[in-house]
Image 1 (cartoon, rainbow, N blue to C red):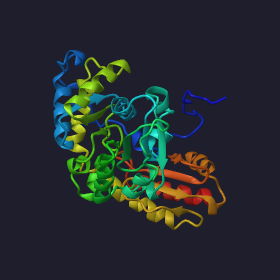
Image 2 (cartoon, rainbow, N blue to C red):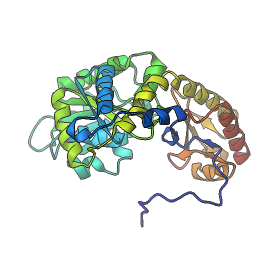
Image 3 (cartoon, one colour):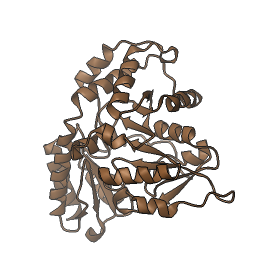
Image 4 (tube, one colour):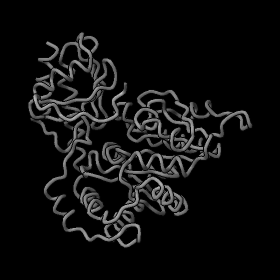
Length: 355
């Protein structure tokens, strides 16, 4: 039987001293909490929450779109975008490791009735030639291909950043085929900080795009979906249907505004800590490290003779937490609650665990 309910923490384990499980593990800072408590609020469903309006206006400008919609989660952003862009029976093209394929509980099929065709490519990315090769002749025997989805950064691709020229070429190829493009921008600002390319330029070829605030930006809740005014109007209908409409949501929107003001530039610190972690892990016999581009460090444990799950169990006993992405593939994620001391602690614990 598959257990769908998350297990509670094991009280016999020591407290977590360095949490690399995910950047979703961040906690709101004291200053962010103060901003939340001071927020002006209103009933969002009546359109009178000024803080949500301020966030949506700012996000539309940041991503170069006409309108924006505040939602509880990034998964809801992805699924609402699919529901707006597609009809039942349509096909979405995405990398075979994309979040909509690997981590949303089969929602594209369960909610929108669409199928997802996984495309190959290194580090979670595919190119325009691969996209064109996957296009089918439009005929009644085949599902209509209506949407191309990309992840910036590509999570299971090692947190890789799509180069802007590659991104533009994929968007152009999709539009030439009369397909819409949706960007899963969960860690978009990591890509912006790492590459120096503005967010609006990265999103320019996309018909919809969203940014998550609960990862490296450190907010407790919230993501913002952006697109044309007509797209957002339809997204509002699906937000209502899916139970995402809020009341005094400005309390959470205030955390997102605070994050935009204070937590974007500091993502460079997370990238530096990830690079330091990767350098340290590379010196441990049996650990093969993928060079990180942003804040995600993936490494292989097979040569050490230990599975990723066993390694995670061993170092958890020392207060270090990581995630597993396969039998021998592990991931360590840096964020605002991980500092240089935490990096050193993780390296030492992993060295002991495989020694």
